[in-house]
Image (cartoon, rainbow, N blue to C red):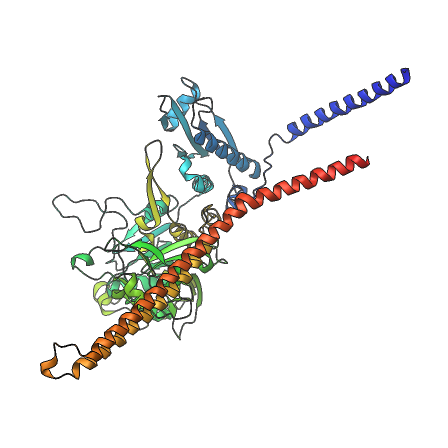
Length: 628
């Protein structure tokens, strides 16, 4: 009996000692790894991991950066969504501090009422938002390095998708010694237009600049270049030419000289620019072109042709307020975005309303990289026909059977469009001291981004205005149009680090299988509809022939042959309409079947598999215990 007690005591001591050792190990592990950020990011886009661009920025810092986050964490009545977002911000800033090798320091300040932290929050310009209870909440940050500082007065949770970009951009602004300069030349009021007292405002003008200009000003010096310019300032690092409509020869010459000197540029031309409101009032054309320069370079964008894509149609509301799938409004998805180029590698969806197509000519001799293309089920139609609606477009559409470039990058030694020297207008304006330019004698390479659409960067197309729960207005992206445009700008100015952050994928996913089903059904519908139209034309021709065979006194009398032809046509029409109904019914059936299959997998199959795994594990444990 005594031996049994001793054995039990020994077992208890061993168990107690083991438990104590385990507790000590757990405490030590917590102490050792308290500051470590161990996470497994299971998202496909790695949305919760620092991107390569951020790591490049923070590991390359030459001077320390301190970030102070002012967050009223002690407030007990904070909304749940704000608490969750605050946790996300804190974790991300901890990650910045951890991965920066000590170059980024993160401090959290709780500005309690009547505290020194609250005084500092007010001094730094943090915005205090009022809750429904009347209490104030701070949630902003200041980043400073040496004698520079950048402030985000309030971190809105609606910008969670671009949180990392905002933070890295803030650090970049602190560490950039000198901003690059971008020149914007446009016949549209993209820079905004102030109302002059006593003068009527131009159609389509607005007081504030377009969103892309506001976004560019965060990282660049943005200056306006007049559409009547006779020279491009040598201090401009990148030239943007948007909707170049009927530019003068001297302006074309100045752009040509800028490119052939080895500078980079972005060109946005459009066969149908809906943002150009001047043409809607009979005051001019709404297409733009750089044909003299494009032809010299060996490329072409036909200003009278619009690209249509039956494989990537967009649901829009037409001028008769009817919703239809319009193939001239092309929704380009990731399968037709260049996955190997940093400008488009991580994009998912773009929208191009009535865009043109970029093609190379026989004498093209530079590097041509398509960035955005149509599907093979696409072609070109006349610009006027594209404005008549989806039904008209589909009736006359003929597929070219191959993809067309909507946006492309061209790199090489650009030949001049003025090999014989400046045009007479330039000579008369500036004198004979301007010698003939020649054919790029310095052989400097340039990079030019050409996009055959202007509307894709219009605010209403690429951005969505909204109001936050705290009452202030903000804009969120509808698609990746703005991302692609800014990516191209940053690449052409040498700022590649931010591209991998801005291009990070969205968590929203379109139902591509359903879209494919709809596309196939619409192709069958279109074929049947064309068949019906051809039969109608044949029947009409037959009726006309029969009408011409009548005598003059029988013009208003329907012959038996005409009556038979009409009856036959009506019968054929009923047959084709019945086939169209079958196409619609099969489409709905395929989509419903897919929906039921997904419900079966999610609601029944997955729980059943989990249950079977649990039962199998229980049986396995029972057998092991029985053997023991």
